[in-house]
Image (cartoon, rainbow, N blue to C red; front, side):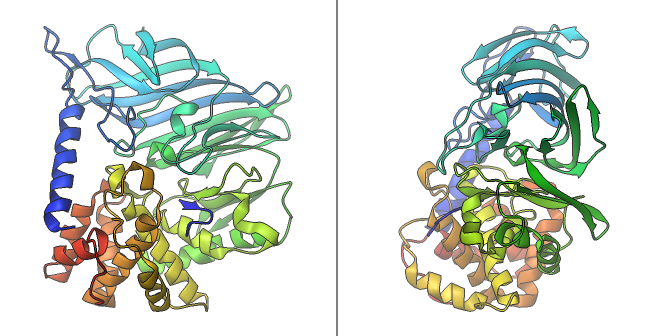
Length: 473
C-alpha cells in the first residue's frame, strides 16, 4: 500500500516473534473451552493485537466461491458464499468475520446449520461436529447495504460511489462484503461472479472469465487460483474504460474511471505495468500470478494505492494534474512478490511488505534514469527518526514512515553488507521458497544468514528497531 503524501535488540525481535507465535498457535488450536464429547469451538479471534476481533481459529480456508449481485441505485448487495475449509481440530462451532450484512440461511455440507450474529462475527454451529482433518463447505446466503470501514488511512471497506462501488482497504475490507476468515495468515483461492446493471464494469482479482447478460444485467467472472490474503481481494464497479490484452502469455486487464482523462497520467502509468513487472522480475524472480493489471478509481475518498492481488487499485491523487507516476505503479507491483505472494503472518511485521516495496521504488527510479538507490538511501538516512521502529511499530503507526522508509533503509543496508550477488539471491530465495505462503521477520533473518553464511541479526536489529542511527555499512 502507498498512502498519498506519506512523507532494539535481537532479544526484542525474538521475544516478540515467540510470544505472538505461541498466542496464535493456542488460539488456532481452539483454546476456548472443551465440550464433553471432545469437540470444541474454534477461536473467535486469531489473536493479532493489530486487528482485534479479526480472523478465527479451528479451521483453514482453501477456497471462496462468491456469487454477488449489486444494484447501485439502491446500494443493495445480495450474495452467496461457498467456503471450502479443513477442520484443524475436532470442531463443534466456527466463526466467520462479517460486518453489517443480514444473513439468511447457512449450511454446512448439505445440512442446515444454526447461526447467530455477535458484533462483527457470524457464529456457525453445524448439526454434527467436524472431525480434525475433515474438509467441509459452509454456504452462506446474505444481503443488505454494505458498510464502510474507516481505518488508519481513511475510508475503506465497501464504498458506494457515484456510479457504482469500490470494495477496498487495508487491513479491513473483505468482511464488509462477504463472510471470511479475515486475516492474512489464512490465504485461499477465489472464484467470483458479480452481476451488475448492463453498461457497468465489475472488476476484481485474477483471470477474467466469460461474461453473460440477461434482462438488463451483466455477470462478470474472475478467478484467482493462487492463495490470496483476504484484504487483497477487491471489487470495483462503475463506468470504466477497460483495456484487455496480454503480457508474457498471461491476461492483462487495466481500467481507468471514465471520468478521468483518457490519456495522460493515469492511463500512461498503467500502460507501463508490463515493463515494470519485467524489470522487477529480473530482481525478485518470476512474477507469481496468472494475470496482470491495475485499476485507477476516481473517488477522492480512496487516498491510497493498494496492492490488491494481480490488479492493484490506485486512488486519483497519485495522478493529479494528469501527471504520470510510474513510481507508485512500481511500489504496488513490487507488493505482488512482497506482501501478496509472500504474505504477513502477523501485522506487526508489515515492514516486510512496505520496506521492500519502497525499496523497489528506488530500484525502479534508478533503472528509469532517475536518482540512484544509493542517493535515495543517503537522503532518507539523514531524514529518519530513529526512535520509531519498523518492526512492532504499534497499531497507530502501521503505515508510518518507519515502516516504509526505515524499512527500505534496512533493505539497502543488507545489500551493502552482503553484496549484490548474495543480496538478490536472498530476495529470490525468499520469493521462491515462500511463494503463496507467509513469513515473519525472524524467517527473513534466518534465510539471509543462511544465504550469506554469516550472522546478520545485529544488522537487522540496528536498522529495524535500534534507537539511534546505525553505522553506515
